[in-house]
Amino acid sequence: MEKPGIVITGASGRMGQMLVRTVLGSDQARLVGAIEREGNPWIGRDLGEAMGGAALGITVTDDAVEAIAKAQAVIDFTAPAATVAFAELAAQARAVHVIGTTGFESADLDKLRAAARHAPIIRAGNMSLGVNLLVGLTRKVAAALGEDWDIEVVEAHHNRKVDAPSGTALMLGEAAAAGRGHGLDELRTPAREGITGARVPGSIGFSAIRGGDIVGEHDVIFATAGERVVLRHLATDRAIFARGALRAALWGQDKGPGEYDMADVLGL
Ligand SMILES: NC(=O)C1=CN([C@@H]2O[C@H](COP(=O)(O)OP(=O)(O)OC[C@H]3O[C@@H](n4cnc5c(N)ncnc54)[C@H](O)[C@@H]3O)[C@@H](O)[C@H]2O)C=CC1
Ligand SMILES: O=C(O)C1=N[C@H](C(=O)O)C[C@H](O)C1
Image 1 (cartoon, rainbow, N blue to C red):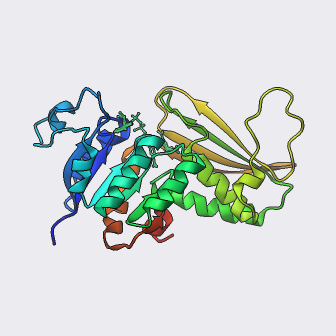
Image 2 (image 1 turned 45 degrees about the vertical axis):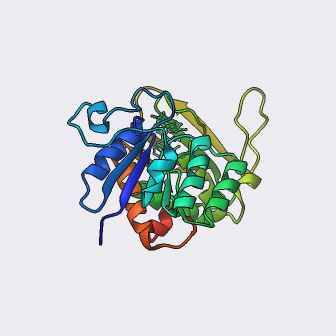
Image 3 (image 1 turned 45 degrees about the horizontal axis):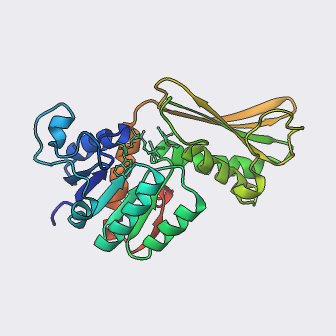
């Protein structure tokens, strides 16, 4: 059987370039297209040359319709509005859509759900094995510890990140809330500033640090009188996310329409 053809969106971005290298290094997939947004200086250039290497014979395009029409999978780490538009195109092409983009509003998620009626969508705020394991641990620890244990999620990222809390922090917060039998919306504390009043028992708080080139760090802190438990994941290389995304694209090849996440891909 022919190897699945992969199109990468946001190809000039931090994750886009990592994904290009990851797919090119795989013997299980073919890179068949690279998409960037209109006006991006890479448009019309050979992808390999734009990345500072040898020509690859793939021209970076802003014609997403044409590029996605020839793909079996789209790997997409861009921005919410772009991802919603790509989801419609991937659905039309019946291509697997792997979404790493974070920062969605609930209206965006409704549109992704609609697109997933036609083709598989695999979406996760973090594609790494370690974080997806940590999600399960967080759920268990939250369930085991009573409400006298306060839960705080602290995340740190590079100074170019545009959304907060991170997608990963929200995954961890959702897992903690689920461990306590709630949805995150019921327990989430708004960002703190000024006279906030004392902590609401049972609530889940989030803090975001932005600086330098931090790839991604997440702590889930369980704090009670006299002791703390801290669950931590440190990402030091974006390759972990790209490897997870490619694994998801391959896993999705024989799946029917629907919404999936990395726990499905990893069998967790
Ligand atoms: N789920 C995961 O494991 C991970 C998720 N992310 C998320 O991926 C997203 C991208 O992150 P970075 O690569 O660091 O950002 P970036 O800013 O370096 O790259 C984003 C790229 O998307 C392109 N883009 C934006 N709108 C577009 C459009 N309409 N059409 C085509 N291309 C478009 C931009 O031109 C840019 O090249 C963020 O939401 C981030 O939070 C990042 C790392 C891991
Ligand atoms: O923007 C990033 O860089 C990252 N985004 C994801 C998130 O929002 O959690 C995953 C990772 O932490 C890197």
